[in-house]
Image (tube, rainbow, N blue to C red; front, side, top):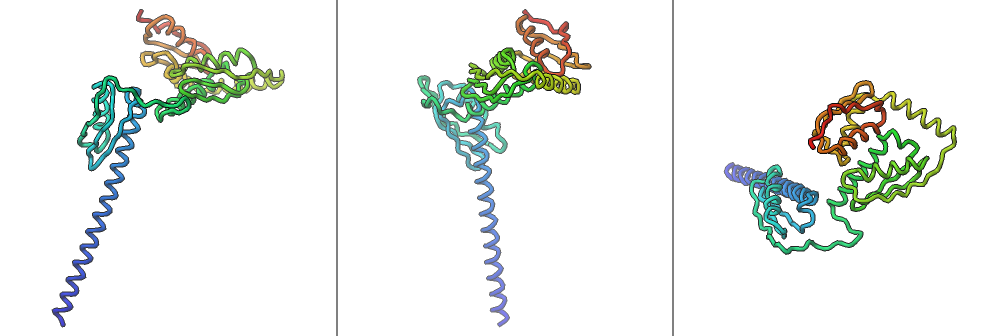
Length: 279
């Protein structure tokens, strides 16, 4: 009797141990599957956002830290880039790069209305940049603007209180990095004198309340969104007076940098004596 009881207890213990081990193994498998899927998504998303790889039909699979890449590209450098991107993802230990280099490769054709994931992200970024620049500009008050972007073409819709504001909105949009064309559909609707005075008064009050730090940040962001290389321009603000220093490539770029800074809300004047040109 005693011996049978011991055998039953031993058998039960073994069964419980096997069940626990099986459960842990299943949990581990699920966890690894989730990790593999996350890494695949991260690699693919980076390819979709890369201007060098987004047009190619690349596929990624990951298993236990090893990424397998397939598809076609036009140049060896793009194949190497795809491998380096995969290796840069946390947890990827090895890459089996099966991408084929085909010099006459033609990317899959898209319809006129179909956009790739990368193009959608680019357009959303442009839309946000244009909206921000219109909000930051001291010369576009009175605008009620909707902004839409498709493959770099920006459409402005809504109203402006003057033709000058409408035209300036169009120029700000066209000068935004990544924009290839602007369809300015803003309708000029003159506000009543009292309403216009109220808007200008409230805008002036808001500008007076803007901190020097806010102005500096917006000037730098304006450079980043525009065709000015702001990486070599230092910006500082004191009581609304913006000082620009550093160097730019040409006199035209210097003039544009000054104009962009002057256009930011809260800026009283711009000192660009220390902003030089390299040519």
